[in-house]
Image (cartoon, rainbow, N blue to C red; front, top):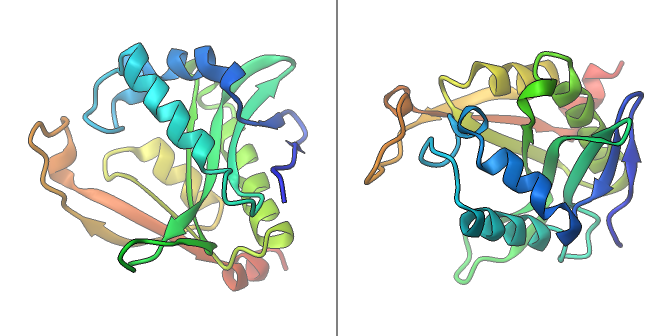
Length: 191
């Protein structure tokens, strides 16, 4: 199964392709966008290319999962990912029943509900069309915007954890948080 083009009231969500490289770099090189991601610093063009390749790989399982570039009236808004998780096996295997969720939105679209709108569409697509049973997302604990988006979409905070970093980003001392929603929980919210 290949990735579908999705749409909401205001967004067209296209399967991510190499053509979107410059759009991704605009986000990856922006200090405000990257404040709570990775090491809290903008990425170089080469590092952004690595991110693009990783996001493109999310669609290679043939499950319909992947990454989408969102556009409103032809203007790039951001990207959203619903990727297969990996099992704890050695070597790890893809688990299409359990998806990892994430997104990045351009600052000029912050506070306008685009993150929530596209996120809800991806959850719907994953649960209704792709057979996903559970969706997980994580962010830095101090990332109030991402946390609010996940909570508004029905994901629940399930844990706070602390990773060790050689070069810790500012705010990481508060930890990182994981959110989750199962298909049954998602269905219950729709009643």
